[in-house]
Length: 314
Image (cartoon, rainbow, N blue to C red; front, side):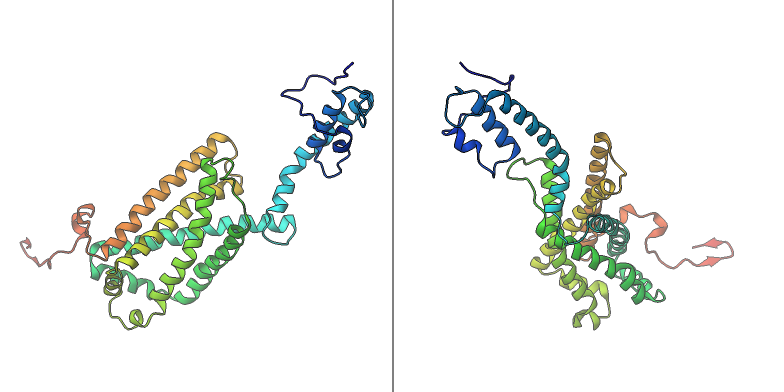
């Protein structure tokens, strides 16, 4: 005669040796529950099979343990995925500061940098004038060090730790957010090399320091197809990293909680990525001679000298 414990969905696997398998200490609560269920569904005379009443009580205890494990699981996963050996509160603060630094000031600097470089679309004189105006800002070196390079360094170091320790579920799921998660890390690693190259070539390179025109230096540098391709990859990586990072910033700071709000935030990030990519690529092509004068107002383009006379101007 068989003793059964309630209806359970799906087939009940029957181990080869119920008594031996049921005594495994390394089994998870779910595995132990399955083994007990298999044990009580066979003839009680089978060696090692527990009495039905005791099995019911043990399965009930395992059910409560499973519920407790489900509540604890997110915390355990966070601890296992934690890149720094710090307290949970410190790690939480670092994560929020990391996402914040990616928007303010690093993200704002990226936008300003692209718009300044877009002066290349107006010709060498316009770009060199814009670069000279930035260089004449009082205490510009101190402002750049504290307001740009230090936040970039912090964002870079913490981002590298996250990228080298976090795990994505591409092999099991392949959801869009998982791909975005991986691309965020990949573009971050690419940006480490891109920022180092771009900073060295436009701050410390002897050719740049000895040039009389920043526009002409960039024009000659981008004449190399390899350098130009590297700039394209770097610009697209920076734009994607910032656009997709806006979504992470909104989530980490609790700005979007519902599903619809998160979908909207993701679309906003995609729009930022596309818009900034177009601006950055156009600015780069401006150093190769691209002009977009049709987007300028008539009085915003260069024209001849205006001479005022008593009867008007000519």
